[in-house]
Length: 85
Image 1 (cartoon, rainbow, N blue to C red):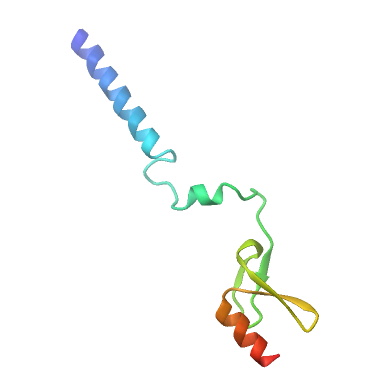
Image 2 (cartoon, helix red, strand yellow; image 1 turned 60 degrees about the vertical axis):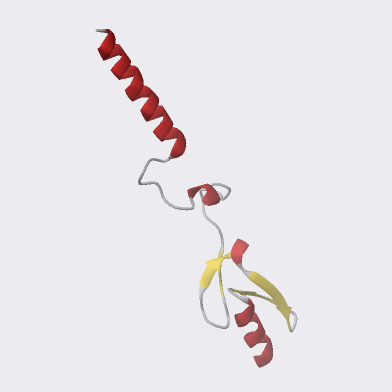
């Protein structure tokens, strides 16, 4: 009987340790901790006028060009757009 209780205790400790290492389980999404600071309702998406890529507003680079605010996915797209303007 004591062996069974010790085995159950060992299993419980192993399970608790595993849960501490992987809070969302082994199939959890990568980057989940990074996403936790965002709202559940989503975020506004903006389109890069140079390459047409859509990205979240919080990740976009912005620039005022000829009095208008534009959002870019990278410095390269921003500089190429500025050369055209």
